Length: 100
Image (cartoon, rainbow, N blue to C red; front, side, top):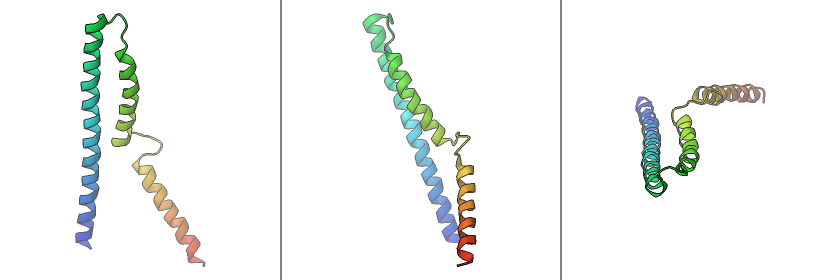
C-alpha cells in the first residue's frame, strides 16, 4: 500500500513537472517569436505601424490562459474546487447506493 502511494505521488509530481515544462516552452517561444516579429517590424517601417502587437496580443491571450491552467490561478474551478466536488459526488453516490 505504501509503495502504491509513493508511486502515485511520483506520477502526479511527474505530470506537474511536464505541465510546467510545456508552459515555460510556450512562454519562451512566445518571447522569441514576438521579439523577432518586433525586429522585423522595426526594420521594415521603423514602428510607424506596430503590426507585431496583433500577434503579441493574440498569442498573449493563449499564454495567459495556459498560465492560469498551469498555476491553478482560476478562482472558480481550481484544484481545491475539483477535489471538493469529487468528494461531494462520492458521498452522494455512497448515500444513494447504501439503500439499494
